Length: 437
Ligand code: MN
Image (cartoon, rainbow, N blue to C red; front, top):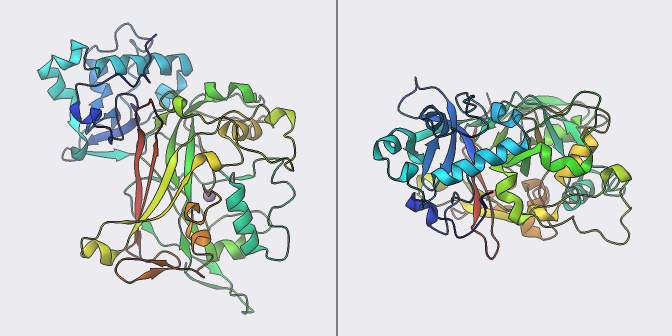
């Protein structure tokens, strides 16, 4: 067994050894790509390493996965990670070990084969990504008690900010998989029905309160049969990895439509994910134990115990307006927080979601809900960050933002850092707002 998280490992891809790089040899995130200048080329699975991509479909065809469990089956030669996901955790780990060997500075197999390298190593700036997996179902949770409390205070000022169920179960709703997009795809401002508090009748028009939600997307690898449950202690067998997720939200539409069945058109026009799936194997050194609980918090029912792990992933949001872009001004950070501040874990989401016998399938996506912490700067959406527009964000051009304007680009980044381990990055999840049509 090879320790693929060992901080002493280095790669013959020199950019991967830079401590600030998102994609060191300890990361090895998977994505689906093709060369940008060769649109006829098939989409296929690759792994990001330093400033390059290793074409895994090509590596398999060149015999580099001989004597591994996928020797007979090129799971990388399709436009999605779903085939690899279906193989299950022991195969995921074996494949990761092999890729780690292929890219290891001390192993000659690819390092010393210049002609093969030329065929299957491609600079990251020459590729385009598509969705890393076919997502059949997408569910969005609401796992930050800080976020739920803030939103409750704004949407229901007269009641308890947290509804009575909040600390007993991870609240979620079934989202829309068809409008999931990969980073870089522009986001059209939605049209919708809204009603002003002082108006008698609703109106239809462009959303006026367009927002982002900073989330982690948990990617299911192994599913479960309809009618069976995923026991909470088996969560590692099912969770393949994580991506950054931007759950774009139309707040004015949401406010009018969300009761009694929850969000609908306020959320279904687009959700964006980062292109590289960072595996649970790469994230294991950054597991942060179960989420903190205070003595007043209720005990979880047995099926939600033990809670599994939260992960110390730092997440930030940056905005660049059209004016900033034209003046060559860099995007500015508007928030920074950590996934470890969430009340519910991915393990609890999986156990709760399947507790009825609902089946998960390889590639299913579970959104964490907006990642907000206790500090103001860690609030993961503009609704909270500007307190519904009461404290606008000041941009370096002198512009201010209560909610998003047309031409704004929202960029989310995430990474893990810990003494003794290499930084593991998620890359970027970005999208530019286009005017409503
Ligand atoms: Mn959400």
